[in-house]
Length: 224
Image 1 (tube, rainbow, N blue to C red):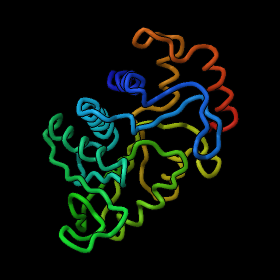
Image 2: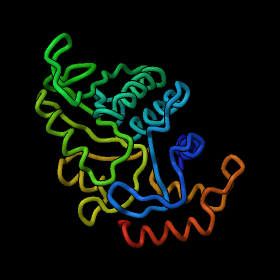
Image 3: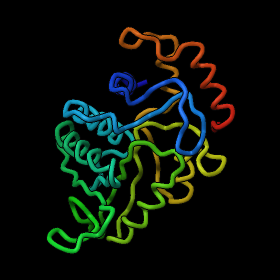
Image 4: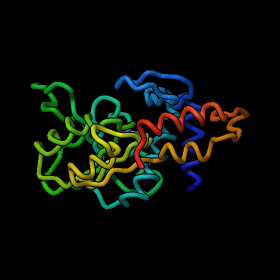
């Protein structure tokens, strides 16, 4: 596992963005882990988060693209932090773009924040986490309605590795439905591999009890 992935796992735990215990998800599923990217709130956290996303995007898609699109609302700070990191780490100037929830009819008009989309633009979409793929159902038509662009892929922070709307994972369903790649900085398999019965910042986060709960959860909701 790459060093930045190990660092990112520790970063999620340290920031209390990734927690283990008993949680009821929006879908109604009872989960032994919970991720809330809204826990990244400080300048230092956002700078580091942008760097991890930038490294993962570089590994998955290279730097041959023009725009990083972050869907409202959580995708807005993600796109800004990551474009800054791409500039600092790789010297690559990528434009950021996000959508508004409501169309603005005065001043900076339209539905987009940041850069406008132009015909021929190559776009990478950035999100926090995708459980069912429903957010892409909203985002995809917004992007395609703005210009004739090529979507190179999607990058999320964590691949939950569980069934989306069907029997495949949300990321796999996105690949099949929309025809572009979908990746994550880390997967839950990598999180478990790195944290199981290993101290992280002086604490064991995935002990035998949590591991048993994770195994049971993935027996029911996981994908191969």
